[in-house]
Length: 416
Image 1 (cartoon, rainbow, N blue to C red):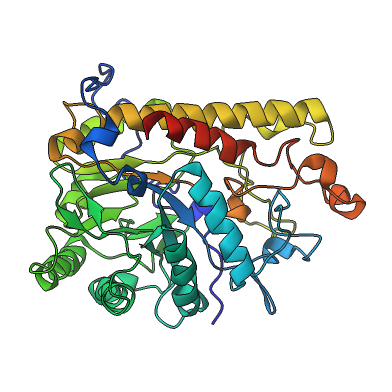
Image 2 (tube, rainbow, N blue to C red):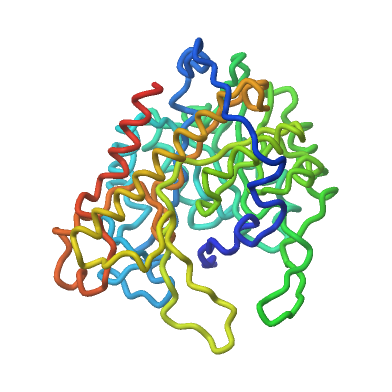
């Protein structure tokens, strides 16, 4: 069964669920760092705490995902950027090997695989992917996607399946077991569309049920079951929800939040961290280059669809055929990478906030290869290397297609 791609508007955060970051408790002080103790001293496995969001859903035989939003691969792909590898197949060992080399070179030590349920095309290639990642000393964990409407009811079973299938059966060769500051180890799982509202109202005022809604008691039964199942196996199983609803996240039994949406700007994160601390939950904000998603070419009449804007700068600012505008867009994206990196490090090192108090540190990198949304760190073709046919599509490829990966490598080197 083919599962449609997750659009950014499906995010519980992007849809406006819960509390928006910013002005939660008014103006707050800057983070109080711990300059006497470096991250590398606090966490002996520091590279494992920087985790690439990874997508293994691309196919060319048959075509999968490259043809979203009316695109026609291999020249016309579902992205504003042409990958350096072209329209590739995630099942290819050659592709996995190249991905592993690129990721390892940055200093990051783990990937978070977008997982779409047992028996899905992604699930079937996990053994091969883990073989490659193990050979490159990269650990693997999982991001549970909303692969069916009532996915909350399968949460505990899914977590147990992933641990048994890809941890136990492989003798833990590359399954991520994260250490906290005290050296206690355990798996960590993130989930998407976890805390969503029971109903939604569209642009026409039509109210409808949210099909994948689950109340807090349902989630709490699932998270409690996960911890009961593995109470004798790990010091702790860390469960994170993509949510800005602190109260429901806490009530549902999650350890904290891991915000996926790159449109939640770093300048608002301090207030989010304060709110998490007040509710005694942890937080993870990602390193990201912004957001530049594809736009639908065909929009139904009376549709509520609104084309996404580029983050951190408005799309109207750039003429994508001009080298100087490509350079300006790349500079803006690199500034977002640096800002998001500095902000998440500062907040997670703040002795007054929940993460430092608990000895917890975790940074997702969003993303290695979510090409539809344009926030990939995977190298793009240099603009000068685009073919005439590719140039005619109007891709946003930068002058240097490796600039994001290089920027990340420099930043990680500073803390490793």
